[in-house]
Amino acid sequence: MPSLDWIGKKAVVNHHKQVPFHLLRQNMELSAGDPESRNLLVQGDNLVALKALLPYYAGQVKCIYIDPPYNTGNESWVYNDNVNSPEMREWLGKAVGKEAEDLSRHDKWLCMMYPRLVLLKEFLREDGIIFVSIDNNEFRFLSLVMDEIFGGTNHLETLIWKKSYGGGSKSKHIVNQHEYILCFAKNKSLIPIMELPPDEKALKYYKYRDVKFNERGPYRLQPLATNSMDERPNLRYAIEYQGEEIMPERQWQWSKERVLSALENDGLVFTKKAGKWTVSYKQYLKDSEGGERGSKAYSIIDGIYTQQGTNEIKAMFGDGKAFSFPKPSKLIQILVQLSTDKNDLILDAFAGSGTTGQAVLAANHFDGGNRRFVLIEMDQNICSNVMAKRLEHVINGYADTLALGGGFRFCELGAPLFDADGSINKAVTFKELAHHIFFIATGEPLPPATDFSTPFLGTSNNIAVYLLYNGILGDNEKEGGNVLTRAVLSRLPQTEGTKIVYGNGCLLGSSHLNRENIIFRQIPYEVRCS
Image (cartoon, rainbow, N blue to C red; front, side):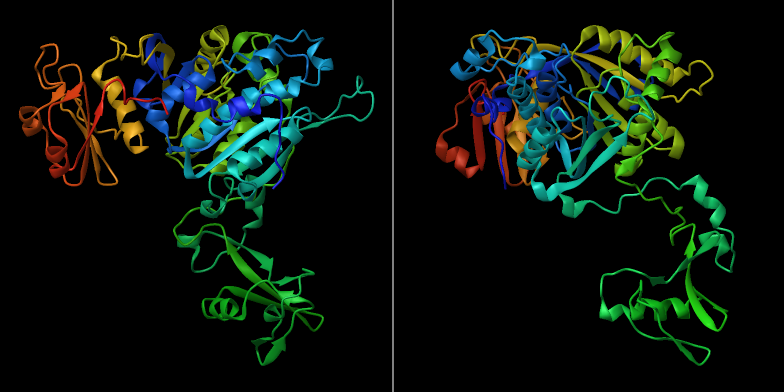
């Protein structure tokens, strides 16, 4: 598979592992709506924020949508990763001309994107999907990087979004009316059939009824024959009806076994005109479980334009200057509805004005779902004064729009997990450290039902994790309860299998630990941010 190299790549391929783990602090003044909705807005550098969120959401996200900087040469986005390598220091320190005239801006953009994409992959469920909006400036480079990180075999499609219906007066060569949305799966083999909600325009074609109406709804007729040029001899056979053998001009869509089953279940309709038979099958509006038939998604998205996104901002803030070129919420809603079920989690690490949050709330309103979102935005002003306020408008209703309900918690990046001398930050609580400890020990997020009044955090793959920290056993002496002794061990909830115990120290010998199947890890030396 072709790979892409650029200035600084060696420094950023594993950079996500060196990003320090930070705590998240909730800001109740900027939170809004129902706090039990479990939606989250995070203000801060998305690389640091993603690392902070990983212990909570790793492997849980069904859909990621991001709209990163397009690197047009006219933007003010800032590459601020602290990549401490001579190669990057030399490159960043060069005196350059206008960014639009400096080809090395592609290296800069790729260095910014790579570690973020690697972290984002860790958030996806095995059947998760990521969508990335981009234009021509970085499309070819992004495609290769996505192939490298997610695997070329997991490329689902590249969607073409026709973003405008006119314009072009400033175009020197060819009028550009589209952008791209790269779509990759975590594991393509696990992705089910992807459909959008039923198309209301197609409902008029479902005009027939039979005895299955109460269960399956009305049906439409679809031709069983196909003009496909794909030669498949097993699809060319005679169907016997009223003493005649009916042959397709080319071939049937279904196997003979499926046709015979449909005949037995009154699933075919035969029409004779001018001595020639036509065979149609009944396509019911509802499936066998009562769900309405979805509509197909196409690789070209038309009828949704950039101006619609600007109009949404105008309706909320009085003008379109609060945020430039926001994506239309309908565009993101289509991606959400295409890739998620009613209780799934959606993540946007370049959240901007909060379009993804609005799209999730709209999707929930449409089908009664309970999808949740996590949004990250670096710019403090945009996060608190645009995104948070926009979602408040959407939750409570604005202008003549319907209130969609819901809510969100607003969080900011707090102190790092470690002090400058490598010790655990004294501000870190037992609960905060527990989330991190369980994740680095098992690779899984801490179970939601964890009881934080005991050292026992939970189990994963027959591994039990314990944390002795901050006097969790009620002993407030300097080292009391935080050191693994015989007495402390006797007070720990007993579990089968391997036990990993984190604590300040251990007074048990190796033979005793082996008998109890215990792996001891010392705080802070064996607490990592990987």
